Length: 127
Length: 131
Image 1 (cartoon, one colour):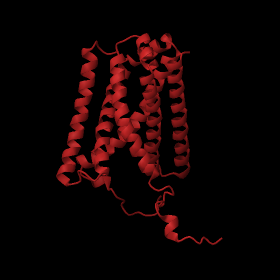
Image 2 (cartoon, chains in turn orange, brown):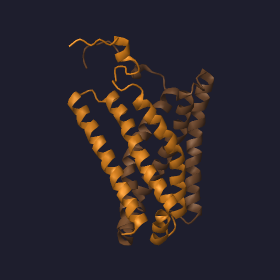
Image 3 (tube, helix red, strand yellow):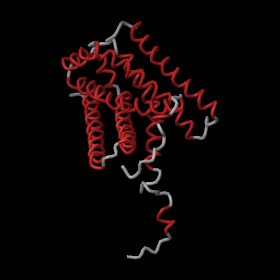
Image 4 (spheres, chains in turn brown, red):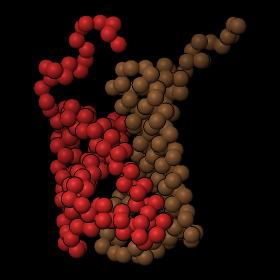
């Protein structure tokens, strides 16, 4: 099958990774989000550290904190997957082990993000 | 991967250790450590959703000496990844590549991360001791 497109048209913005700068951009956007969310998370933990269960539960049930925790979980596990992906690509030189690890990291990222989201929703919406 | 016997960059075996390379390696190392640390975040959220008994068990687990030491390590990993992440974002914007600036910023990040770690744990201790 002849592809009549100019080869440059097919390659432009895609490169050898086949997805262009998407990985790079997503890593940066989640990084900026995590800068603010990370500081918020540490502040929240420090506030609740010496309190009891009820106050921690009430703090996360607060809609403001619940929303930020939901977004924090998504950004965190997304950023984690993007970062570990590059580490595996760079340092794991066995093809099958690399693929297994990439799949494992993605499974954990999705599973963890959903688990965290469900926990926040249970806290925020009542059990 | 054994297509060649030529030495491959970055020649770590003969490389002089310097803040430029160490800060880059540490960014990845702390990232991996923080990925493991997400298990603690999950544990906290799940037990908080589960009930006071589960949450108490989680806190008792965190209060063990081993976990306290690990938590100090994770605090520093967080602080370092945060500060060096900002440095990386500034570098993505094309800033801070002159060699003296690059070296200086590397050391600033190291010192800031240590300062942040000390501040956080000072706050924890002063506000009522370890959890």
